[in-house]
Image (cartoon, rainbow, N blue to C red):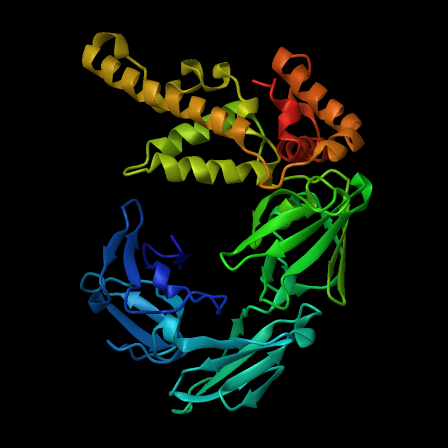
Length: 436
């Protein structure tokens, strides 16, 4: 469910498809492939084609088969006399992929063109050039959004879109896709929602990251295949690994709490707060986590590979690792209400079906543990780093050993300690090979 209007017994949902998302516009947009669903209380949503949907401008009364341009409303046609709540969407009158094209990346700016023949276009902080608009990276370095206002020729209400453009060189962006420069103070949990990117060329192909608290410094060298070669600046530029040219900021930090990124004349000072970071609304309990996996595994048409990948991403968000779970955490006794075990002794066929169901679940949980144990950072620490961080490594290793023995479960630790253990486990993976 992507977008919903609730509050009545029947309402409309919009189901955006992959090509309704533009790489350069923050919000999804109406396109030919967009699907809608008619929803009713107590019933499954019924997906329909656009031919069963009517549209209108917000604030007007008349519905029509053709979507007008702007911020509009869409409504699935219900049964005769049935009142169906509409849903708000954005219609450009062109396919999302056709709206904006990046023409070229200059060292300090990006040039792009907008293809929209339904009225006038204004882009804040951009100047008109022969092949479109030019926006300078420096003009957005304070984190301000790049706003594009569209003014329909028919006199209807203008509307604004937030644009996200690529820029040459090194960039850090916040969860909203806005650039960050200078000093950045964030929590450990935010490392997984801030992103880095490097767009290089033959004359601009490298940047450096110094991890002051770890006593290490690395140079990242860009290749045309979209990867970065990671070199140890304190170790005769020896290659220590490869890393994607775009990714989570946590991958650059390598467990550090204090880093300095240098690219040409630009600097980013990243300081990670060591305080506890609560995860709101989620109880970090192994049995609850295991039950949530069981419920996901029962969804119709579930892809186990995709599910495993999704669940492993959850480790960073919640500051835990799936291998912390033990077989007892996903035992039969915790699933009785989900399995429907009442009266099962009298139904041999049902017993066999539930046994197969549980065996599949057990195999998946074992797989999840193994993949969690094997998950490590793309760039692994070298021997010098291992020596410089031996105390932190020993502390994290002791935590995991005490967890395995039952002396002190990892679940009891605060968010800071859990995040710290996760980062050191992944960045210094070879030191934890004895953990099972």
